[in-house]
Length: 185
Image 1: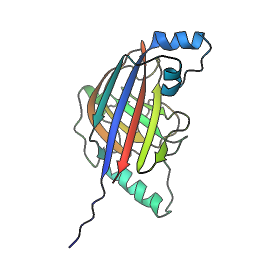
Image 2: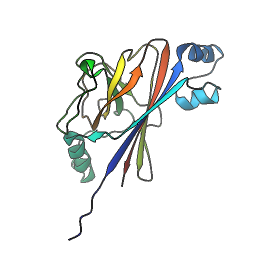
Image 3: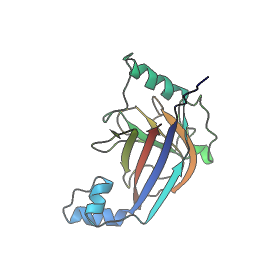
């Protein structure tokens, strides 16, 4: 008997930029909105954090399969896709396939993806969202991708995946660029 297993591997990267560097680039007339813009302006992150191995939740699996057969549903496209972060309700949460939202009831933020994101190249989906100085200023202990639309502090909608991991404590003195990749093999 032959068993073909499909695997999804998710990877997260958070590039941390100082708010003062971003403000200086804006004063110089640069339209700083994405990590590429920041790098092009000669601004580099002061720290980069990476994490792998997250869990695709049941709702995400169902959404993917339903979309695959043309059964309708909300796509994880630009205009819908968001990268969601939360404080895990005070600790790094243990995630489960049955999760439908982040564990954080209040300290959570879902940031709409940057222009041109998400995108697919080969077998990899890449989603990028820039969290400005005024949002998500709390410890980041969990993350996921959802299809909830506009940025905001409401609960995740259509959560695709969920990962409990310490990514750092964001403050209003910094802007973070979150890049998530999901590779299917």
